[in-house]
Image (cartoon, rainbow, N blue to C red; front, top):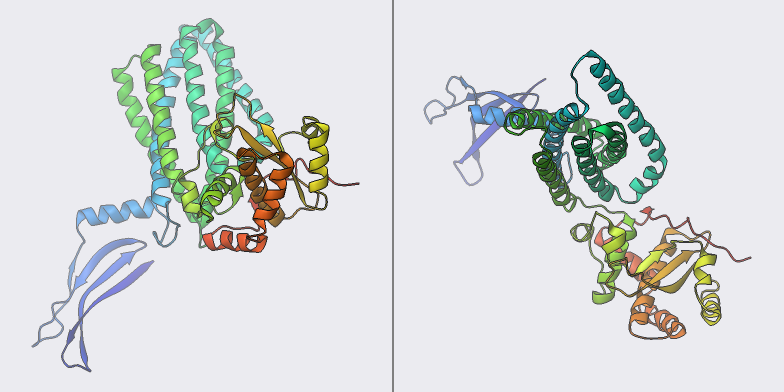
Length: 448
């Protein structure tokens, strides 16, 4: 489809009258400038014959690249953070393709392809390890579905980490060729799980960047970006295979480390520029930590910069833990007096909170955190208010108050700012309350 763009210039002749002069006429085909028609008006002859010329080569190349790899109408057709994200897509796929290219050659060295009998055995072994990987992916699909919903960015990050781990396991086949099948079967299974994380998370993130119902266009360009990264990785891998001995386990391990580092660093850089407006367990803990210290709520972009994505259960500083085990077992860890205090104080409230001591394995700066459980029928607002109560209760426990006093002081402190005021602060900061990625229904309770 041909589009015309009329570029105009104005020359003022009087205060109340402007004389229109046409400077140039730009002709497009799709998003690409095909050529210009230039005007050269003069006072004697306002309109000279049209002069046609093509745009500079650099401009045409830029427009051609944008038309193939960026959604139509960019930047108005996507949300902020899109360029860092697609840079991550291209660079990470480039590094992954390079590693795959080199690792595949290493596996051929490990399995051996000398002679027709060994070649047939190698082909069967290769097919078997792929089949085992597919079975592992099918088994992992159900639990991964729930985890991906809770934190899409973290599990995409973990997908790249798992691919790096799988490539490292592949290299063990060079050192232990007699155990080729079990080694590559484990590696193939991990890769299947990693690709589930990557493909599923990519679909969700692409949807995030489609504000104008242009998801199909963004998905199409996403595939083109992947192909660009793969093509670059193939070329780099082809060059490296001439320089590096694919049978050298040390050199290949160094290559895997570099490739994995590129994928993880670009993922971390891009995710911190993707604003997610729905709550999950980590985001709400970040919000509550800042809220207790400053009385204000962080925006989604500010929270994104503080998010962590790798083994967060071990080192993310959490004041509040949702559930974690059935409520009867958690209550059983308390003494009789503490149980009575908990049951009496939270009677008639949609949630129940009580403290626990952190295990040494968890690198949490808080030696005490608070478990929270929700009653059946709790709403999203009840969930958020429960988190606020638990965080404030944890703060009082850290001050050295007894359990009963901590709960009483928390009720007193929260009366200064009602639940409605707190919800309005969340909405004003840009958060969405109508949905959240928190599995608060897993450990619910009810009074008989």
